Image (cartoon, rainbow, N blue to C red; front, side):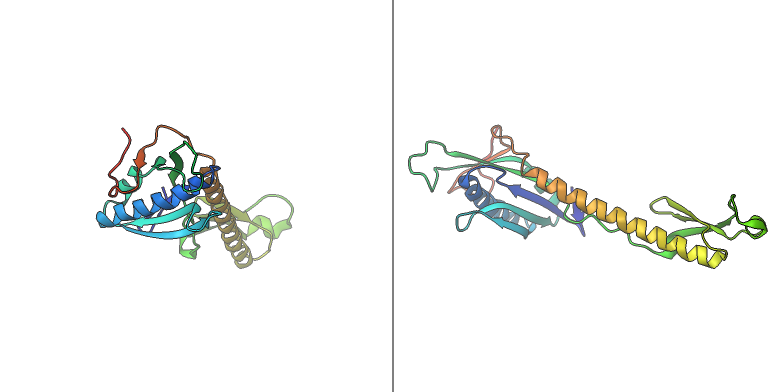
Length: 217
């Protein structure tokens, strides 16, 4: 579950369902927000993807914070059902419209880089280089303690130059790891859209009932 400054994130998605599911997302998000307000929990819409009808959403990413936020998110996680006749097809017999809600990461925390977190150790390396390299410890082994990343640099003849290169290498590797983490989080969010399991919802909500008044089970 994503936690940014105490904020949890929940993605509510219509998946690949019909336009009624996008309508159901809008209804369920409003119900969720009302339920949160009743409990003193704060919500905000971080991102919305509109449906093809006014006031509908293919997905809504919510930020949820406050005392009890984690338990609240859990209570809304899973398959959700909005139970009402279709507003678009008068003769449609179906009244159960399913959507999925899953905790997700929005932006993984960045590693950050602080030279104070780096242990620098002079060392000698083998290979060509003549007497200078054999007798003087000009190479650098740099360890970024929080991540455990280690680099060894002996490209230059001066220790100070190798130290500078080692720090730059560590910075680049941390940035690359952050980029990989952000891409993985984005991929995980998109997978939620295909994660919908119709039937056996964790919650069934209906028009005209108070927040959380109708639940399965």
